[in-house]
Image 1 (tube, rainbow, N blue to C red):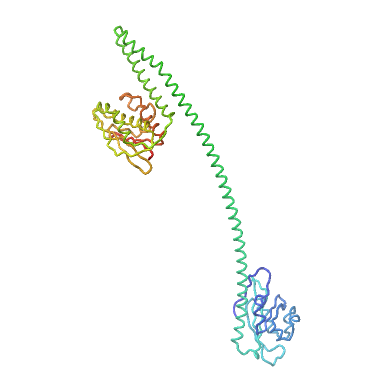
Image 2 (tube, rainbow, N blue to C red):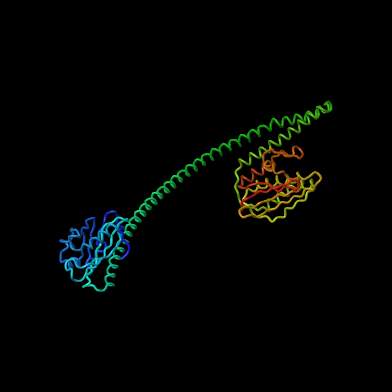
Length: 431
């Protein structure tokens, strides 16, 4: 036999035979277990009791040297096995009948975490067991049974630890789920609070914006009366006393008249801009074909004056819009394209539609001088004129276009390069 048996059942010493008691109890060979420096008997099987003709009660608790007083060689080997934890065997004459067949002792230690617990002793009498193979098989059976029990107890301990770990993980998962549910409730509550706050702020901004638009409309409307009076008096001045006016005085009166006319035009555009903001728009399905035809009819005089080439052949889909507002937006885009052509250049304008996944994009392309990238974000601002007084108008046309399209739920933009014309677009929802 080789190697030492190791118990992993815990820190408390466990009897070696107790690990394989069902096997030891029915083993044909006598077996005993001793422990401690005094080699005290802690277990004997029935075969050992029969060998010594004593009961378990008589044997358990005695020192092994008292059980076999004449077996001095066996005791020495047993003490060495206990101290060295190395299995050994020993054969000597019977302690009771020296001239009979010999007794063979197989001894091995039982250790736990490298600490000795006990020692097992198996006795075979050569007169009873002449077959050494049978004795070796019995020893192997006992050792394997002890090993199996140790492994079983180790597995049980690991399973118990695994169950504890699983239980702890379950508690952690439950706590995590509770925290996630609590966070979800808090997030929903916070989202509701934010939504309510946004709704309140939106209502306040809408009210404020409406009040501002009303105020602007009122001021613009009221300012037109004194402005018209100023313009009328300037005209009367020129008509009544024109012969007596000097050239400089006449120029001053003409400037007053032109300024009054320009300011009146600005107020009209401001009233139109404010009116778009206040007007209630009911969006319906609008065929672009009819809107384009109406705009082109109203532009015939301008097209003839500029000798322009205009293409509006379509095709034209149906969009969701407010027809008068859409017509106004297209009219301003077309007039801009006509008047901003080069001085010695025939205006070439194309009005077209492009169907996209979510919207219908309407383009107005021209062959004008183009717009620098730095200025493209400014052209939709109210009263912005990038060319100064080179062209007629107040600079409110594209601002009116932007406001009109946004009121219909759309967007506007421009793509342009200096020297390559401009391409203004507006996106409208599909009907």
